[in-house]
Image 1 (cartoon, rainbow, N blue to C red):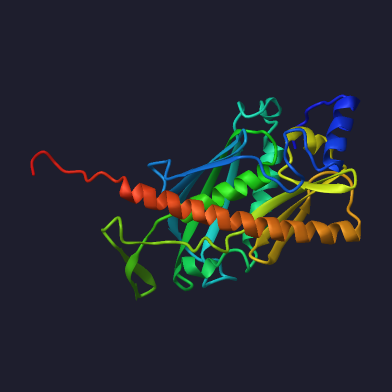
Image 2 (image 1 turned 60 degrees about the horizontal axis):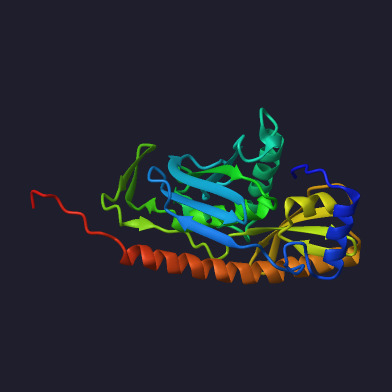
Length: 292
């Protein structure tokens, strides 16, 4: 959470706005700010996306590499997250200021994607006990305007939707050595089912009410905040990110709010991703050599 000092009058103004269901930017308590997404933005990555919520700007690139499965999970692949905070994103990130936040977000993503409801790592297995795909997910925070957890989780989901993994045409085991044959056709690849990939939802309690998609000012006015990982109708993780606590009834209402909001957001996101993919396919230019 970024620190942005507010006067008492500003805090009271934000509090009254939440109470009246009319926040200082005109939204209701359950509304998100405008979002923008763009996939396939990094040529050197197998999957990439750039996602913005208001002025929060996230860039994600994914590269798959062949690895050896873990001994305790011989039939599963691997996924690794790395979050980096640009010094230009926020003054708090200068020097080593962003390392603690980056570590918290990385751990939250690892915990969320380790849930069996979130991501089927078995789909990344090539040859049980011997070979699997390991996905390196690099995340760069270009600009911060609050609600980083949500923006990053949505950017990762978009990049995984865009990911193309080379298809293994044959896998042979000869004397303990694995011989893999990958398809030479760039269009012959495997895709990840992104429908059930988790979304992180940040909920802040201001006064007696909970809000989604908090701005920096709202984050600093909240008495307690939580990040909830949602995959379909399942909760994959719950993490508090500030001081304070939730009453049991408030926590139940918070969970219901995140499930409903995440389901709606997931439907709109997948619809936009499919629409963008169709537009990219229709706008493709057939390249040809001048020697043809």
